[in-house]
Image (cartoon, rainbow, N blue to C red):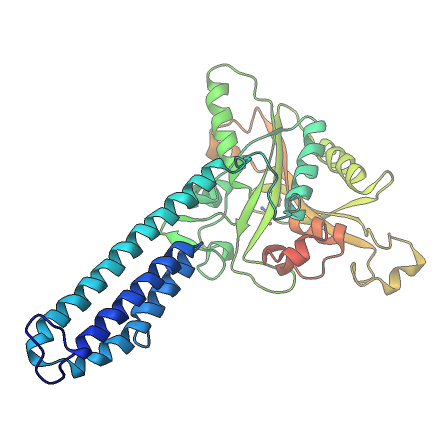
Length: 369
Ligand code: DAH
């Protein structure tokens, strides 16, 4: 090697060292790439070679000593080397990907019928819906058919045709959720009376019998919110229309209902009360399910406040005004109606002290039923 001025085809020492360095790196990386079993290990090798602190950087440091005349040659060598590394890298990457795919395809097929790994417990009905279905079933046994009813209702069906006077407090903005004038979230399930009786009136006009016994259950809404009142709660409504229906039948039906729900011998009493759509109207009490009237322990009962009675429903004989508003003839038909809260029955049944627990949908609570 002739030092300062090399013959034009003899490389300088610096350039020779670069050539040797690249040749050595070349042998090494080809072997390393081929030995990489996975994509991440291949990428690691690639970085080890070309990264900032990689093996190539040490070789590039020699470029400083290469004479200016040889710089283009040195640059071409380095660029050629890098290009080759990239080619081999891509080729090995593709080979690994197709090997992985091949292995996947040759593996045991995925069994779609295997059960999932997440052990999801079996669900069950919400306590309110379980009680609702139980109440509906009792009335179905007593001969009532079920009917649906909308939760968004016309003022007409929720109030007017049920003979609420226009200034009744329940119609107030403070008490009901109005959607727009004339339309609100129903405040009770009594809207179903209006709908079903209006449909019955049509059939009667066409010659059908005026006999109809219906129950309907669902959500109702009022601006109320405390331990025993929720803005959304549930009611079940029932009514029976026919020629010559008497209040004795109303009492008979509700007494039979109470016995089926709370057991034979459950005492029932009616207290006179007022609802615009019935006359006479009454509130229905059953013997407290925790103590019972005349029970010596009842003085301490907090559920019935030591009265021995629990109020469960409102009821009465359908007001002639309601018959007129729905197109039925009050001279020909009579009927009774009742409405009761479902949530309260569920709370008593399961000893739930706060109605809000029912609607927060906390699985730690709901899983207990
Ligand atoms: N709709 C009444 C309420 O929400 C309950 C009620 C009372 C329903 C008497 C009736 C009835 O059908 O006859 O408080």
